[in-house]
Image (cartoon, rainbow, N blue to C red):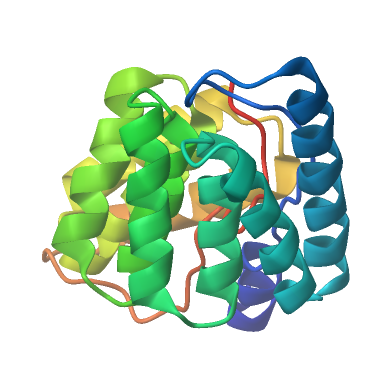
Length: 208
């Protein structure tokens, strides 16, 4: 596959918008409606690229329910898009403080470290994600990329193959196979130079 085509395919991002509130402190019914409206509005603004507006809406949620994991996660995504990586990490960690099994927050947290080229930390948090959700295809793709960057081709191949088993994205399955073929052809444990992007990153998403 030509490098340019591989890069184009690899930068496809999934944007899954949903609005739910999750356990923080007890929230009155009328406040739950407000939370849902603010989350929905924040997601709409984030999709349009109005990150400051989205931050305001998620902030309104946290004024009502400071432990709302989804608002912290989505705020972290917005910070990451703005290049505010320390703030993004803090928000993803806050989401996990409120909901320790929030596997997508682990994936998003790992994506920050991957983007900053801290591959050991990225692997750590992708694996925490997979410990909670072993069949989460996105995390298998992402940890495979991290292992690939670290030059650990055997582990990278294993996770690319697992991703291929689980994914319903033909484009990414084909790209994963290309990575496997390239890695299998390399005689040494050296990281490839091709540009790669994490899968499912920047997903303003729901907790499953």
